[in-house]
Image (spheres, helix red, strand yellow):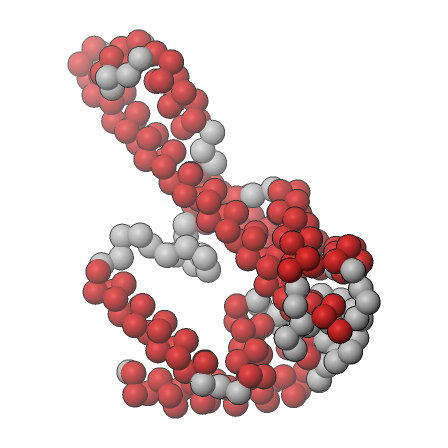
Amino acid sequence: MFMKKVVAGSDANTYGRSNNSPEQLARRYMPLVRKIAWHVHGRVSSAVEVEDLLQIGMVALVEAANAFEDRGLGFASYAQLRVRGAMIDHLRRGATLARSAMANRKQLAAVRSRLEQQLRRAPLEAEMAVEMEMDAATYRDLADGCEMVQHTSMDEVYSDQSMWFADVEDRADDVMERESLKAALAKCIGELPQREALVLQLYFVEELNLEEIGQALDIGAARVCQIKKAALDKLREKLREWD
């Protein structure tokens, strides 16, 4: 099961109302970390090793177990947010480093091409270093770092279909419009009943299916579908004014 049922008073989900210790909670929800890790890995393919995601997720799970305070959501949902969020933060940091490395690689290629035209041969490392105003050790570190870039992985991460990364070259007016829409949407969601907002969060952000959401909220999938439809109808009505 992706998520165990969130039942009021259940010691499996509500640490704040049970005798479960953080260690017991962490052990109980280790399978959840594995499920999320494989799910995230499937979305970004070779951009990250699944073992890395598992390690990051386990740390996040332990932190979640120690920090959890029951406020009606249940530990399963809380842990999923923390674990998946930690994995995505790791992907963001890795992608930022890779973007810098790819920029350096382009710079190296441009300098090498220029020297090849001037010298009529492939330039030596020493010549590349002088052209780039670097000492030999600094140039070697730069070149080695560029060789480590995984182009296929980063192409996938930065694709137009990526769910986590936005185009950094968006026009200013596009960025402002998107931020304005996000603010309007957040305001509208904040005005929804708690259960409707939670269903949207779990469905669109956490990417659970209707059955998994039903298990989390202890209701049927058909009821989840009704709640989701009602929430979306309200959002469409509210956003008409923004449009």
